[in-house]
Structure formats: structure tokens, C-alpha cells
Length: 424
Image (cartoon, rainbow, N blue to C red):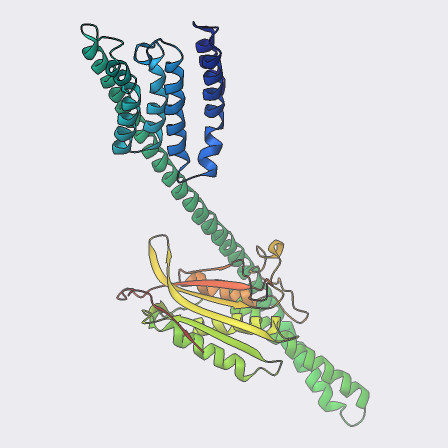
């Protein structure tokens, strides 16, 4: 487009009067203004458009004043289409009419001095000719403004469509990630169930044999009795681990009812705090008022929040920190529900590990098994909810972990207007 503008202006410069220096300078100024117009509008978003139109009107007046003995008779009068079209592109219909009126008045202004000095006379039909030119100014302004308005409307429509598609793609990617995680959980659950059943029977035999051996040689062979005790204790630990595998693999029996999520979270906070013996953890609660009940299994949801809060405490076990819990009304697509955020000021979870954090047997703890978050994810999925890790910035500038849990509302619940309040 810039090249076309330059060719157009070059053509004007080559037409008579070619030797008019002022004309060439004015055309050059118009070309420079046209090239720099975008930057002018960008630097002055509120007034840049008006300045561009006004400068083009002034340059158009200078051009026709140097290309005709009387400006009103200049063959270059169509240069006024330039500011008129610019106004039609930038402004709405009423402002376009206003700028067209100003450009028309600027063009007609060359008529009055000539008539006032009585140096020239109007030829027959001159007024009609002038009126036709002015009407064409307004006609061009309205046609261009119509197309510009339609183009802007279509652009906004496409932008909204693109935003909706991007949002839909994000939701689709999230749903696909949840589906993949559920498939992995289901496959590993079946594998864990089979292995647990196969392992439990030999463990029972080993434990029984160790206890019988311990009873027989308790007095005669103290070393053998001690070793048998080690065998029995390790078997108990393995049995507990197998039980956890079975809990993970066993299908959940969810009995949902309308429950207050805030009460469940408060119970989980009290339970974890009561068993905590590490450094001080400050808890910040932010609950929306009059939260509607969610359709959840109370015991299983309490297990979810206990696990997440305990993980947050463990992440801050070295120096203490701040635990943030917020509960608010949320939306996932067209579904309404309760959104719970559990954030801490710990070291956070690296981005490369976030995809694996809900996988079974994946853990960053030295003594962890890697089933806690897998069970949490399974419980949330069974509630037709969602759980994800989001970016979180603490007040001190550190990036802690933040888990976002979405639980659907009970069918009879209605979401009131959210009014956030802080509670210590």
C-alpha cells in the first residue's frame, strides 16, 4: 500500500505544472505524512487521528493554492478526497460528516476572497458545479465509512471468534489431559490391583512363618528372634503399602449430597494443623460469602483437601511460610461450581514436572510412595470436577505451588452474587 501511495503521488508530481516547486514540496510532504501516519496515530492514540486529518486538509489547501490562478478552479481539488477518506476510515458516521464539512468549507474558502475583491466573476453554472463537487465529497465519505464500519465489525467478530476458539482449544486440551490421566490411572489401577492381590498372599505366609519362628527361638536364639522380628515388621510395612495400592485401584463408591465446601476445607485445615510439629505456618483464608453447596462426597473431599494441605505444609517444613486458601464461585465451560485454590510459599513445582505430578508412583518426597495426588485426582475426576496446577506468585516474589480444584454445584444450588471477604 505504501508503494502504491508513492506511485500515485509521483504521478501527481509529474503532471503540470511540473516546474512549480511549491507543488512538488507539498506533494512530498503529503507522501511523508501518509507514510508516518500510522506512527502518529500510535504515538497519540486519542488525538493522532484528528491531527492526521487536519494536516491533510491544510496540505490539500496549500496544494490547490499553488496549482491554479484561483484555488477554487484548480484541477487538483480531488486532493480533498484524501482527508475525507482518512476521516471516514478512522471515525464514525457523524464525525466523518463533520470532517467532510470542514474539508468542504476549506475548499470553498478560496471562493470568497475572489468574489469579495471583485477580481473574478462566477461563470454560468459555477455554483451548480461547486455543489456537485461538494456532494461527491459527502458521497465518497459515506461510502468509505460504510465499508470501514463493516470491516471493523467483521474484524471484531473474527477476533471474538478467535478468542472463543482459543478458549475452546484450551478447554479441549485440558479435557484431553484429564482423559489421558484417567486412562493412565485406570490402567495402573488394574495393574496395581492384580499385583497387590498376588503379593498379599505370600506376605501373609512370610509374616506367619516369621512370627512362629520368633516364638520358638525367642529364648534359645536371641539373634534369630531379632531377625524374625525385622522380617515381621518389614512385612507389616509392605502390607500397608499393598493396602494403599488396593485403595488406589479399588473403584470409588461416591455418595454425593449437597455439602458446604468451606466447612470441609476448614475441617481439613484443623486436622493437618493439629498434627503439625514443624515451623509456624500462617493461614490466609479468602472465602466468598454465601457460597452455594456443592454435590460432593464429604469424606472423600475431606481426604482431597487434607492431602493437598499436608503437601503444602511439607513443602514449607524447612522455614515455615504462608498457606493461602480461597474459595469462590467458578465456571468450567457452561458448568457452575465451586473453585478452591490451595497455594503455598514453598519452592513450587517445576513446569517440567507438572504433567507427571498426578501420575501414580511419581513423588518428589524422599519417603513418599507417589499415590497421594493420584488418589486426589481420581476422587476429583469421579466428582466430575477438575484439578490443575497454575502459576503462582507469592508476596515475596517467590513461585510457590498452587492447586486449583473445581467441584460442580448441587443441582438445587443457585449461585448468588460473589462478594469476597477476607477472614483471618
